[in-house]
Length: 228
Image (cartoon, rainbow, N blue to C red; front, side, top):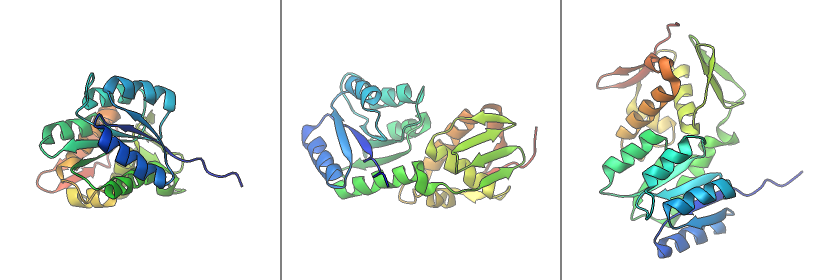
């Protein structure tokens, strides 16, 4: 059997000491890494290195992390794990709305970063796929082929968005609380407002079908089972 290729991680961090530690821990866990110290270089390596995941600090010289996410999401669904300072709450939420999959705040443990990287990759890879197709009304999610359709039209989603839509479809119109959604997404350790950002981004990706995701004030979200 052909051995599985090591996952490639692009570490985008302008503080050399932090980048050194992150690369050392990631490589010790079998990952292949490349490093960028500026937003401009991050985009160059994203195109050339073709990473499986980008570990992205938001505070960067030349081009901010938010601009990097915005550029990447215009043409790619590669998982992005943001690194932020605790005071950067607004930027963190904007990053999630732009399509980042998760975040981690400084100061952090390198082992926690590695664990978070593995969790995001699991959500994006084969270990989170099942050989089942879920349908609710005219919304269809195929976790085996990693595809989604709404109103008969294909929709391109990031791994987190696809899993979120799958959870809403499987609930068959039942209201899912923010805590419940975050827990099933494997993000129970973050602020519940994170799910609001994910839902907002999912609605935008779904276009007209996005109105099917209903907000139940004070509780969470559900998917309308009606069809167009």
